[in-house]
Image (cartoon, rainbow, N blue to C red; front, top):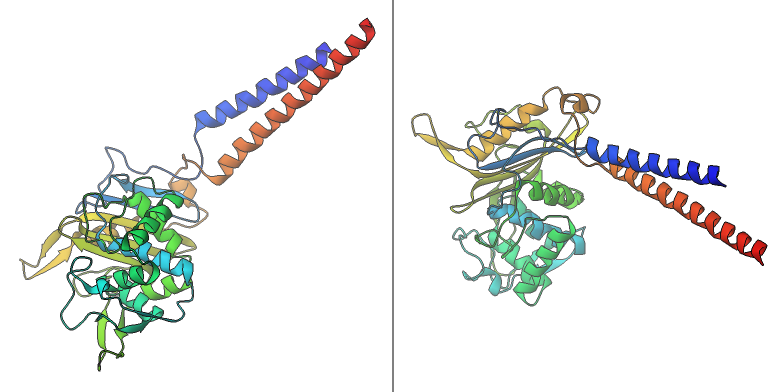
Length: 359
């Protein structure tokens, strides 16, 4: 009996030591790829991150947990709430009068915006939301889904919490707010990665242009173009990565600076980039200007050159949590609990038998 107890104790000790070793060694799945001596890959922006989703690897980060105003990147969360209720974007909505009031929605281009009472399909409204970043498309969705605008914002914050966004808080569905309206590059990656699971979202953010059609309140529609110059570059931007781009969303306000969340699929890997607080830079002696968020995003993507599913772990050694690591810990704890239970049962049996002998 004593030998069995000793073996059980040794087994428990071994399992506990193994668990401590795993904890000390650090999890496997994500890497921290920036230190004080590393090159600044996003010199024109205040915060940035580059993440590979299939392996859970962070290739680069700069102030990735710094809370900053996201501007129109906010609309990714707005789109998520709509798509969760209507993933195929079926049917139509009527634009609320409140949706086009300046109190909720401003900075609309004259003659190129939705009108109060206008009937528009969900799909056309989503395209207008995501391709040219139509502000009143966001409020149109919000008032269509909730009688009280604040209820829609509450749903946005609930969803952010559900997605594990620990440093995110929304005050509007557009991104015009600042102050208590913030997210981080790391949280924005989580939001975009979730949004890209919806086929209609992927379809919208992959397009370069679209049209708001004629309706019950307008005789003629109007055309619009994307604001994503990483996927669709003009002569200011040179990028070998545009053909791999699958989305995602731009943003700008004076408080937020120039922001861009990008998605790129290349060589069997899926990359998510977020750059926030970008500057506006002179181009060719001030004749034209370029956005620092776009320049930095293209620069970040240079870190993906030559990466494959087979070698990414070698080039970026893993040192943070992954599902496999977590599963290993669960197995160890379960085994330890099982050994304890067996030991307890044997002890109870021994006490019972001893009590019987004494009687």
